[in-house]
Image (tube, rainbow, N blue to C red; front, side, top):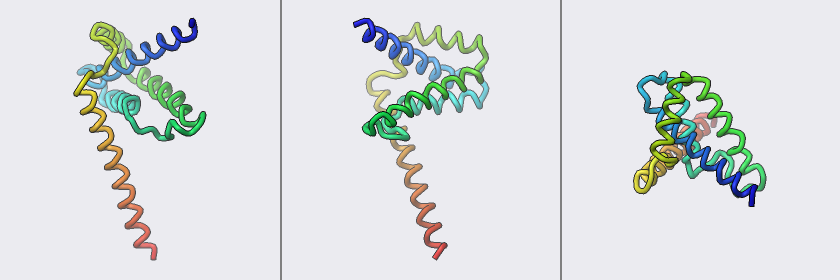
Length: 134
């Protein structure tokens, strides 16, 4: 049972970090490039769509175990330390969820919409390029 408690604690810690990143992405004292990176990490963490689907054995979870921590490390290097400490404190005070209830579904819908738009634009570009090649 000890390992289950450890995993639950780590999951709660990760939720708190993601919430703090969300707060940082909206903070006035965070540089624009750090806001952009923080927003991308939060969107990836909340996205129901992964770069590698989770149902693929081992590799499906590997992207979450590599991409997310690397993104978090990058953002932490971009955010000034006092600002990050303030974001972590605010996240702890507010609880570990970025957005609960209906707001979370709206955020998920926006993220799915962005993914669908990216796929549609990619397919459109591929269609045009294949048409011009012949």
